[in-house]
Image (cartoon, rainbow, N blue to C red; front, side, top):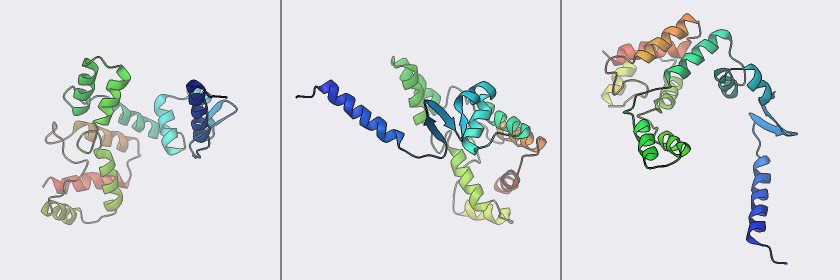
Length: 195
């Protein structure tokens, strides 16, 4: 019996689906046609939690306390707009203006994020993990300046002196008593870096 192309494609798709369903992850699983995230049914998350709470849970494996939730929500709100002149906005608008679908334009915009726009957070997090226990920020800042090493998370193309979002987020974290050692280090290091 000769297998038709469509039948062959269906078999291929079933094999791929079966392989994908065997991937193991500690975050999500589908059992008996029900999706679970960290052991919680997605249907329960949809019914009981906000988007911000659900994302926090997805990333941390626990629900935010009231104070963590307020700070997390502030972080998400601070990230919703960066103006029409950013590389991601220009890319998305250009792709959309060529007649492409919304998901294609959004995907193109996301792909334009990188170390100098939208991606500094990863480099900053690595820097904080490596240097967060540093006692002498003055020497660290001098050393990095001498080596002409740009530190991710410091400096902004538009906000030349202070990024008002960063200041506000740090104040919100302090007010909610969730600013830890990295927030303290970030501010201490910034003072030395801007001398």
